[in-house]
Amino acid sequence: MKTIDIGIQEQDRKEIAQGLSRLLADSYTLYLQTHNYHWNVTGPQFQTLHLMFEQQYNELALAVDAIAERIRALGFPAPATYAEFSELSSIEAPKGVPAARQMIENLVKGQEAVVRTARSIFPVVDRAQDEPTADLLTQRMSIHEKTAWMLRSLLD
Image 1 (cartoon, rainbow, N blue to C red):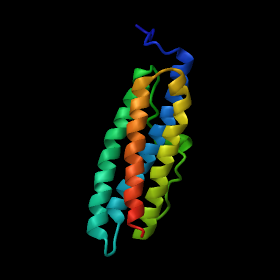
Image 2: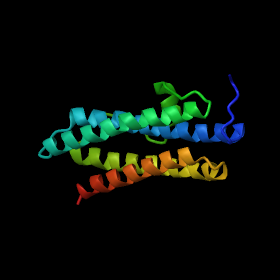
Image 3: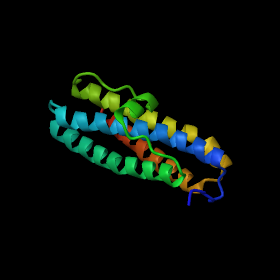
Image 4: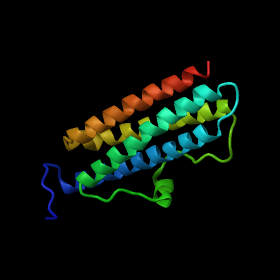
C-alpha cells in the first residue's frame, strides 16, 4: 500500500520531510562533532567535558533516530550518507582538534544552529497541522537551547 492518508497533503509532507532532513543533517553533524570532542578533549576540564560531551552525543544519537523515523512516517526516505549530510547541514564540520574552550564555543554554535533549523520548519508544520512533527521540533529545540545554555555557562 503506497498511499499515505494521514490528513496531511503530499506537498506539505514533502516540505516537512525536507526540513526534517536538514534537521537530521544538522543533528548528525553535531553528533559527530561532539563525539570527536569527547575523544580528543584535553586540559584541566578534561573529566567534566569528557563526561558532558558523552552525555550530549548519546542524546543526539537517540535524536537522529527519532528525526529519521518521522521522515519515514511522512513517506519519504531519510538522508543517511555523509555526502547528503554535508550538503544539507548548516553546521560546518570542524577541522583539526581545537583547544577545549574552542570546542565549547563550537558546540554552542552547533546547538544554536540546530535550534534555528528546527524553528525554520514550523511554518509548514503549523499550516499542515502536523502535531507529531511540532512536538518533535519543540522537544528538540528545548533540549538544544538548554544544552547551549549549559555550554555557554562554562565560558564565563
